[in-house]
Image 1 (cartoon, helix red, strand yellow):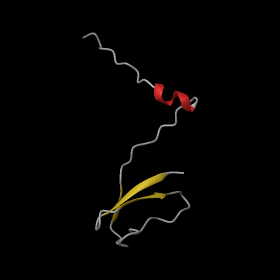
Image 2: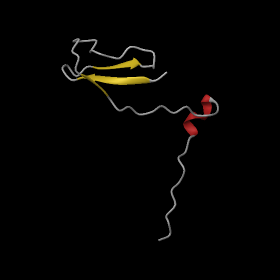
Image 3: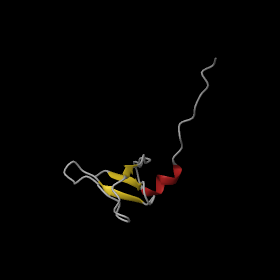
Image 4: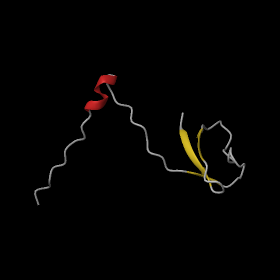
Length: 68
């Protein structure tokens, strides 16, 4: 299920909501109940393959120069 982060334009409170196609639209801030909220751009989560012991051993692919 997609988890989205929102921020209230009025009180700047940040909150998360599970949003599905069948769920009700997020309409107001849970703190101040203002209707001026916006969806924030969030970083995606990474689900690695393999065991939990290999989580710390990930290495990004190396970049090679284009030779130019």
